Amino acid sequence: MLLVKLESRSEGVSMPDQGPATDYTGGGLIAFLDAAIAKGWLNVSTAKALRTASTKVLEIEPGWESVDLRSVEIDSLFQRFQNLRRNEYGDASLKVYRTRFGQAVKMYVARLDGDANWQSYGPSPKGNRREQSRISHPLVKQNGALFR
Image 1 (tube, helix red, strand yellow):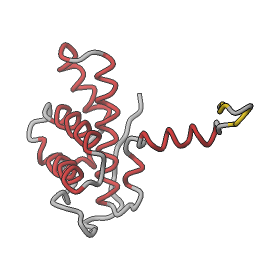
Image 2 (image 1 turned 90 degrees about the vertical axis):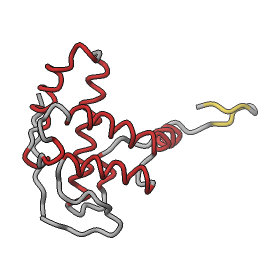
Image 3 (image 1 turned 180 degrees about the horizontal axis):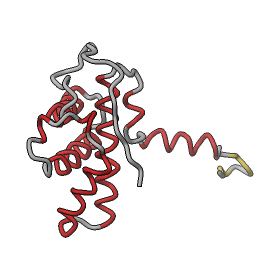
């Protein structure tokens, strides 16, 4: 089991266009994801999926809106979510929720810490995977037909 404990590098870093999510809390995470949707920081479907998973996982914690995410052990919190909600989700869904929640928290904390590469902690854009495939398997023209 991978234990992830996030710590911020700095307090109160101000970033332009950061939005309302500036306090490292569960509520701030959801506000950050809402801002990501509204401002186009992330693909809308991706951000909504991250928000849904994060909300569902956080809701098991009383007062989750004010929980400081830097002091939360992500795997421990998710294990509690899994124990409480196992009958509501299949194994594949639980795995996806774990991944999405971890990505969302990492992106949020990285953005607040002033990491210019905060988006790199999230899901890879599908277009990049296709582009990598083209680069590693270029098309070759042979007898008028294209082959990979």
